[in-house]
Length: 397
Image 1 (spheres, rainbow, N blue to C red):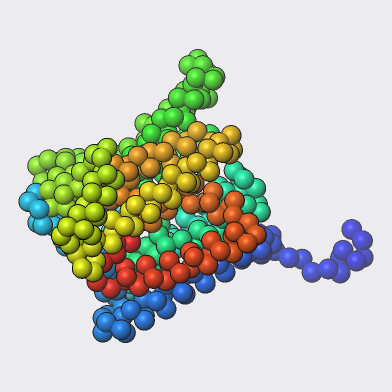
Image 2 (image 1 turned 45 degrees about the vertical axis):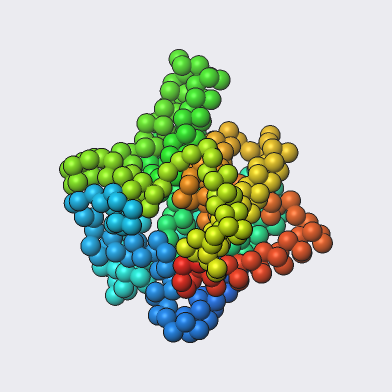
């Protein structure tokens, strides 16, 4: 060791590691934090303008149920008539985290829910950005990052909603599948199925990854057989909740029945056509929409724009199809099918961020003047749509 090296201070290895992490993610943290500050300001403006409590604003729409579940848990009776809403319509993992955080700290359930949404929104942003780097390179990922953080659907990262947790688990699952960490990938997919029913697409992604591994390496290959851990573990959250409901309510389908009955959720290949027909009827015959001015349901208009964006994003993904791994394709197409066939939850911005490769590719490919115009319109949409989401029931997140 030279005299100069002896004179230099010794930097602890842990400090070096933290410095490297900070340097790697400080731009991402700044972009994410700025987007959250903007949305919090919009929420405060909405609350002041409507003389509402900020907690009520940030737990609007489905957030109401994610506040009730940690407080009251699930009822024993399955209500199936339209309008007979109950906590049984929602899955338990996010409310369990809320309950744990609230009891471990002095935070209220609402504050716990918002805190978790912000944290999981950040982890989701980190993971999808890392995936974008693996798929398209660092420069494209940087472009996708800003578009992602300003996308209107990410308003739910500032509300009591579960999408941050869901995307974190699914994105982590896709990363682990690419690294052939089969059991861990299956575990994350299994946890995601206890967050939202759309996570069944993660089960399909695990099946596809395992099937591809066995197809190329053969059944006799021991490592290929290990891939079966992913599809085996992937549905355990939904199966576990079903077993709980069987003992709790007498039927493993209690959550499905509650959603189908009370919320009139159903799947049909004609969902988007039905929405378009409803919009035409509201606009030109008789305004009967519940969520919008003059009987015009704004959510249907948003669903139609979301459908166009979804198909555009899928087309752009197809142009670079060699860069997207099979499990990511299965997840994205699965989410697209679920959104397009859902009569109650169409391709709105919240569903689009769950099909995150679609959002990422649009942001990653936009450059120059096109990118500036796109980001300008995106910010306008984020502001207007968030103001309509936080208070009242005109625009679902």
